[in-house]
Image 1 (cartoon, rainbow, N blue to C red):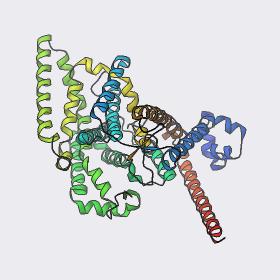
Image 2 (cartoon, rainbow, N blue to C red; image 1 turned 120 degrees about the horizontal axis):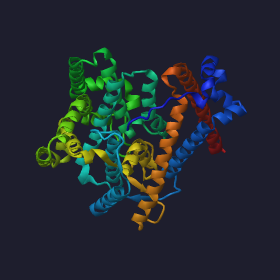
Image 3 (cartoon, rainbow, N blue to C red; image 1 turned 30 degrees about the vertical axis):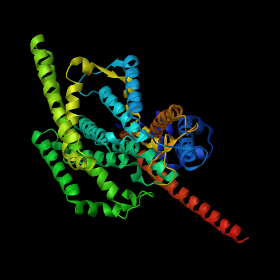
Image 4 (cartoon, rainbow, N blue to C red; image 1 turned 135 degrees about the vertical axis):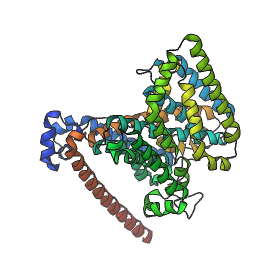
Amino acid sequence: MQPLGANQIDLQLPDSTKDAVAEAGVAKSGLVRCLALDHQALVECKGALKAVVECCTVLLWFYVADRTSVFEYGAKSYSRDVLGFIFLGLTLVALFTSLKQCRVPVLLNRQQTEEWKGWMQVLFLLYHYFEAKEVYNAIRVFIAGYVWMTGFGNFSYYYKTGDFAFPRFCQMMWRLNFLVVLVCIALQNNYMLYYICPMHTLFTIMVYAALGLGHRYNKSRAGITCKLLISVAVVFLCWDVKPVFYAIWSPFQWLMGYSDPRNPTNDLLHEWYFRSSLDRYVWIHGMLFAYLHPSFEAALQRIDKMSTKARLFVRTVITAVTLALFAAWYHYIYLLPKREYNRVHPYTSWIPITLWVVLRNVTPAMRHFSLSLYGWLGCITLETYISQFHTWLATGVPNGQPKMLLTFFPANYPLLNFAASTAVYVFVSHRLFIVTNELKSVVIPSAKVSKLLWRNFGMMAFAVVVLYVAAYLVLRVLGINKRILAGI
């Protein structure tokens, strides 16, 4: 879930007016001018206004699909054959129609990581749709893979660029949280229902803190080593010592607390502890891998330059050893029962991830090509993750888990329902990806115009207060009217 970079300012005003707008303050902002129906502002902000309307339309669709009786809900039914057929079929389509050469064929290039996220997301979603409990341990590894890439991607960016600018950090937080906050407000859900979002947010902040604090030491091997060790120590203290975790997060229970209405609990922080603790170390391994990336890349280049026989021998040995280690991990760890596996997962999830990276990059051809269909799906993983709750699956109630399927046809047409709901679901997710990034470019300016950032934050805070008060008053009036009508 890598955030896209952008150089943006308030409501897409022309470059010639940036400085003037920054100095003019709220009165001359694009938002205020649009509310005043200024024709020029409406024209200039047409793209942003269309994005707002489209985003609100999708939220309305989520409500209709998930919280009304307009559509019927179906029961989940697992078929290993159907799940395997869908994934294999999609992979073959991707192989024969979307195999493309990478722009920069290096170890873990951008196209390769997007492809990686894409195929993992497909299996993650099929696991939810079919409730494929037998692949639970694999899904845990996939989620660890996402968190690993959070450490790898963010470390790579900060280490190479040294860009710790606050506007850029805000862009990342927007990318991770804007959509989920809107959905939580619109559907009265807790933030923790979509646990992937707070988890990635936390570990992104921890990477930012690890490199941003004392950033002058980032070019020193000793400095980076100390930061990695401190990160391990912090994780151990904050998760392995459970009372410390609860002491830290209890004041934020209003935000991180969760209780499934169908299976309520008094320990509202249990879900957050369970989810975050499973992958608490793997992001540090991602940072370590990013730091050693140049060394790994150099080793691959040395192998590529060997004679044909030597090159073949070395690659054969690497592949054989990797497969042997994978077989050992599969036999001794992966096949453990769910609860036993969860106990060892935080300490072992880096193993299959590392082995996959080795196998995926062992030859130049493997590094030169990627499946762009999975890469495209990898770009919208955040949107597909959030949307699945309300337009592919269904929860039915606030904070409910997606235990049902959204259907458009009678229940005895499961594959037809799957095809129709999937088409709607992927379309909606892709549009959300576009409009949320469009709105990010509107609200979060670049570092060069940071004055606008604080003004936009102030205006958003004011708008939230006004809308909250208005909603409270409307609900209050409706409640009074209902009591009056009940009395009559």
